[in-house]
Length: 89
Image 1 (cartoon, rainbow, N blue to C red):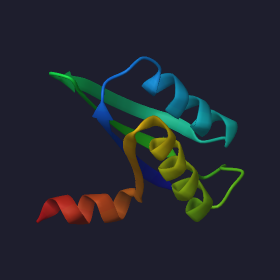
Image 2 (image 1 turned 180 degrees about the horizontal axis):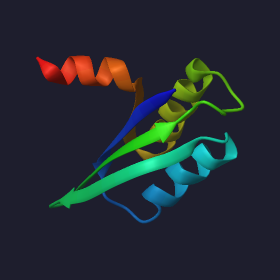
Image 3 (image 1 turned 30 degrees about the horizontal axis):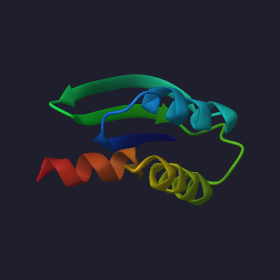
Image 4 (image 1 turned 120 degrees about the vertical axis):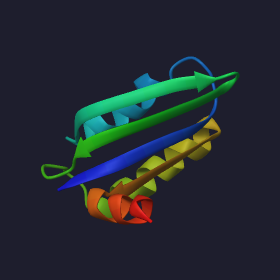
């Protein structure tokens, strides 16, 4: 199963490293990544493969949200099909 991870917040050192570390520890493979900084705001979108994740999708969603809270960011994950359906409108 593939999913989309979005990260938004004020830019600071280590955002990509911390998010990628969390994904790696849970055996989530990053297939594609795009990030940019708009003035002081960081935005990142990742396409990930969660097929071999060692935790459930719900637990991963919770872990990413918690990591975002620690870092002062909004981190969300959605199933790729749901993400595409929402952005087709």
